[in-house]
Image (cartoon, rainbow, N blue to C red):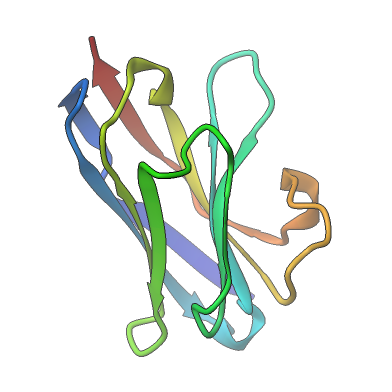
Length: 124
């Protein structure tokens, strides 16, 4: 099993920045792909970004391209999400996720491991 724990969420003004971290423990060999999703009340969990183990391949939702950057440190078993130029519509609970392979379709149901989530609130 893999355990994921997020940190770094909080309150920020529009235009500001936050960096989320997600520490993985347990069977980390099962986290070839790691990523971030987010969810607001009443909506489905939506894909934000993902990265493969080597870090060579990254993927982003159109809504965050150019503003968010995903990276990972395999020595620390940690994945990061640097969020810049934040907008009120980025407000959500952000979830870290991991999977033993990169799903063809990067939707929530395709990922096996999840953290409990961290709240990000962007004030207008």
